[in-house]
Length: 538
Image (cartoon, rainbow, N blue to C red):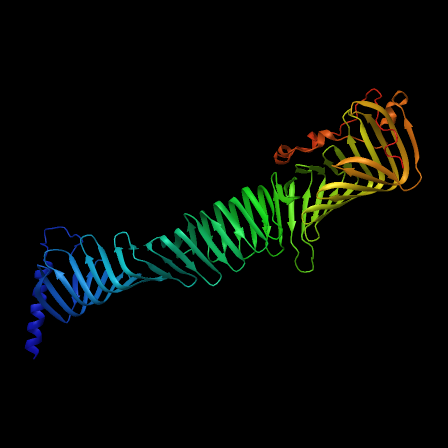
């Protein structure tokens, strides 16, 4: 028995020398392309696919440089450096990467392997499963083209095509890329993922859906551990309240803080208000957002688009004890709509109750009419102006065809609208009026001057038609030849035509404070005259 074992050992050793060959002592040592047989239960010769092979069966082990191959059986081609392995195949490189599968072909010359059938690849950071896997031992890269799934402690990733660099720990995914975790899902067509840093790199349209909101980008990075994103190209954040987008976008999902730059757009989804600017900030938990850098707000009013600009636009949602959703604009507010323009130092808009406050020397223009007071409060109904309150030093004035200024002033006023047009104004306290009467819109026939604590002004097609006095007025009619220049304006009157914004003004960069236009003073003119001397009298 001992003799038989000794004989088998000698034969096995001789065959090994024949298969792998020997080097002469005079030749310098080089790394061989031949794999070294470390063990097998049975050794047989034979022919496979027309080539001479050595067939090794049972617990086969080969070693090539830093790589070990294990299998139930291996066909070793005598005229090449190819090994075909079958059954429970396992390849291990440098004790760091392990691959298992049903079958493998190992090329010792090129140091590559192709493994198929329930392939599983593992390193200390992840597990990859795929039907077929190609591995390059020199570059230490793995490639699959028939679909693969990668699992690490934080994420599960899927794609049709993928490459894994085991040195840099970087995956490159293509086609139908999906990432799943407890808090978010990612879909893309092209993406990279570092299994060490846990950072995702976007290289095309990418969607991230999470519990606290959704993200979209066409390039950028996302840290799956810290939940911090840095996006570029058409990026946006989508939450229940807002959609914040820009050319550059930073978002900390854990803190709920977003920052956008260049071509920023902030849209309130509840009331369809959009703000555009150059810089935007968003605080998710507070329900607050701020846009600056020449920001412009857009919303629909009276079936037309209303634009409002300011140095800063700030939106605040109703949250917790806060019951009202608000929008604040400050300073240097400008408003433009085809039939309504305005300016003020600041504006606050209660979006819950549809009430807008214009503060600090507000001015509104409607066709040829100008409305001024210390504060203006506008009530909207169904996105249409319904009522307007003018508090303290209220003025309504209009310019006629001869450049005369019809004027009404009072302590307070209330204006009523119908279908977006002004129909009636109640003057409440300290009422005064100047109204120029014209004949044929070309000849001044005189000026009505009236003083009455309370008045009612009625309009048609946004033009003043009648003035009614609720208290007996102190009224007079002054013919043109008796009209003095100082009598042509009420105390405190100014005509602010130069401040009236155009659409271009609203979209232009903000003007520095030192360069702001001054109110236009009423030009001196010769006494002109009026039509219908009795218009405006009760």
